[in-house]
Image (cartoon, rainbow over the protein chains, first blue to last red):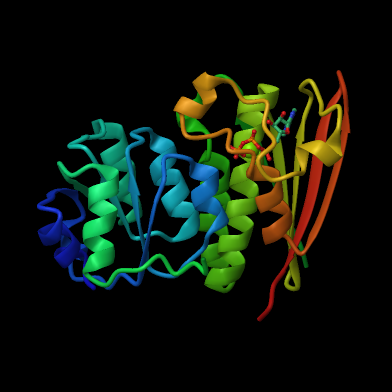
Length: 116
Length: 140
Ligand SMILES: Nc1ncnc2c1ncn2[C@@H]1O[C@H](COP(=O)(O)OP(=O)(O)OP(=O)(O)O)[C@@H](O)[C@H]1O
Ligand SMILES: [Mg+2]
């Protein structure tokens, strides 16, 4: 799935790095705890979170995550967006809640990549 | 040939935590290490950097880059860890609700560091501080 499809499925606002909307995404993970995210490395992943601080972008940077989706209509402040821009990480914001957002993406074929 | 770099970790600005790890990541990218090796170093360094900020009021990271391996030493002069065995368990944390609201305090940082490093050592003394030494092999 490309990032553009995620954006369409979740009716997102694109906050930065629009030029990367054509990039391919293979897996997704949703969490507000960054060390939980840091435990599961997957290639070309998207992160869904309700957390708004710069550490979300830092976490994505360390893990080579290429897209962050902020749920519940949250918009991070300009320093967070600026940091993502610098790192080439696409930032999306959706009105959907975490559970719904993950469910919609899962149903559309984007899986978590972890062995349950 | 080896390159040694030192980075200070500021203890009073959580929003800047991760800058040292980010600088390390950029440096390793320029040097042409594989993405997997760089990611393992970045995550291990970042978890250590965050711990130094939230549990020890800052510290220092020293990175030594050699062709066959990257070593990371994270040291602080914070309160130390009374029971290292306990601290190494997944899910064990002493983080406050404030820290959890910032997205940390899952008790996963030390286990993650151990997982991503090929060699891992932790020394800590209550009242003196903590030193974590990690090595990641450059599988090129
Ligand atoms: N540098 C340190 N100085 C003092 N105590 C530490 C230090 N690093 C870790 N600890 C102690 O060990 C515990 C476990 O650390 P760990 O990194 O595994 O989890 P955490 O930091 O609490 O949460 P997370 O890493 O998931 O955000 C911490 O809660 C803290 O009590
Ligand atoms: Mg930690």
